[in-house]
Length: 364
Image (cartoon, rainbow, N blue to C red; front, side):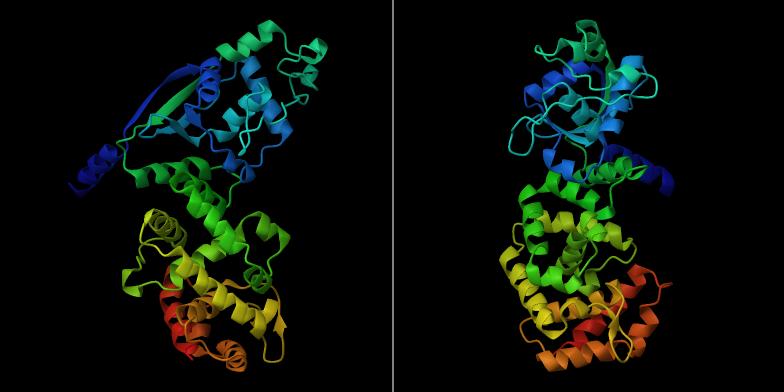
């Protein structure tokens, strides 16, 4: 009975509708501002012009396109949950796509594809360059092609909507976990996303974590900033260890974004004090391993969880610069740290042990 009840409950949480729509109808929705593809997402998705051209090739050849998933907002506008790149490609190729400033993006000039070599440099329609434009017939083939839509209705549970977004965008996606969270955050509360980016760009923070360009490109600095916001003042009794840490971060992020009582200024002050102090103490060695003589290697998450969270918790009364440096060096000989920071320790077991350790060590 338990499984039956769970199935029935969750089926009620996610209500959907669906039908086929022509690309011409998809274009009209966008022109009339009845669909939100969130141009902010473009920085997270990485389709190149070849991938975009392959989509147009598939449409011209009549190859079925996967359905687009949207969520219906209270005002009736559709939020795109899955299908951003497909729709963005169509809108860019047809000259409709706008950026975050509502300015038109330069139209897409196609690349040659496996089956349609003559697509090279083809445009949707340029009156001054008919030779490189699709014909009227070819444009009609595209506009009449169908892409199904699955609609998550507005009465569906909001968390279920974000869960659906993650599931649809995880398989085969180039998005990192934090890029996925960023997209959810843009849908939930864009101002919180912009605030998180501002916090993560703080110079002292960037200098102490000293990430590689690849990690920054994949938004790992935003994930570390989010981890600090969530865990530096976490009520450990409220921490749900049944969730994977990544899942917990996402759930807690949404809660904070929607919490009208969450004091962003106070948290930003906690963040600033912590990393300004660390910059003076150890600079870019703050989260590198100390071997007894010197700091070596790159950024490590476990010392970040002890040092940053511990100082953040005690930010109103933190140790002196000299005392903090000694505590950081001593950390790597601490028995609790060595026991719970190994590579085989699961994060949801590690954190309940390392967070209290940091809070105790970094008391003034």
